[in-house]
Image 1 (tube, rainbow, N blue to C red):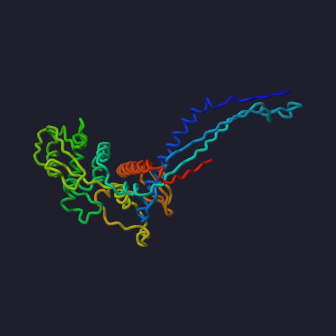
Image 2 (cartoon, rainbow, N blue to C red):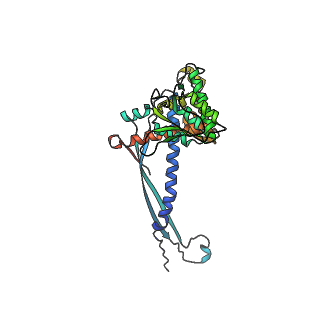
Image 3 (cartoon, helix red, strand yellow):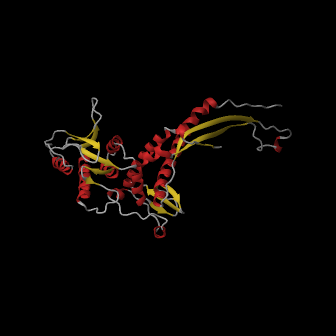
Length: 351
């Protein structure tokens, strides 16, 4: 007696399933490793190292399926083999052999993007996107606004210009809770950006008037009508109704965050870790803790020098800072990959 069997080619069945399972898996891993790389970039800054960044420029996943079928036969009395044979069996073998290409970020373009002030259009987008944290976005991204200063390491945090900025942030928070303040771009061919005050009267007219006073705005009447104030990246305002903004760089944000890394006292005493001066309000927006074991509730964690450095999952303010920093770092990485043809690419086949 002869028993034989064959399995159907599985490609039409498992191909879509492989895509639905593989794509989220790749996205998850890339997002997680991007977060870890960003945190490592900050932590190693605290230890005085300029960490290199690697961009995942492409992933080519070669998926292969194969099927097999088999049967087991026996001769003789049934009692000799009952329960020990599988009459028919089949299986599908799935192999995923990705080839991952990395782009090391280096050269003049990378340096310029790291040190350049954050563009005004990105400031506007990040400010407006931060629905609950507009004050955080302003404190984090802006160094100066019409004479109200927010320096990284102020020699005198209680100086009037610094107190003006802190009051400005408090007023922006108050007005944002009623959706009365936004950064907007002009329409009908107007590419300029504006600070837009609206729907503030009557209950919040006092806050709107105080905000204009802190910014030194002249010639505006706070009577309930919409107020549009032009904004530009500049050291000084262009006129009595204009706002001049100076923004931080991605490197500046990393340096501020590095001061928030909780390093051991012996590393500070030995000079292994950089002992930064006290930061301004931006430094209070992020806390990077350390533990001997990887915390289960960590939002992101990075292992370095026998410690786990991490952002706590319940620390909403630190997570907001890190999310904005990560977004800007991603923009920097994306800009560098546009010149990929001129940079070395590391390609790693994975089995």
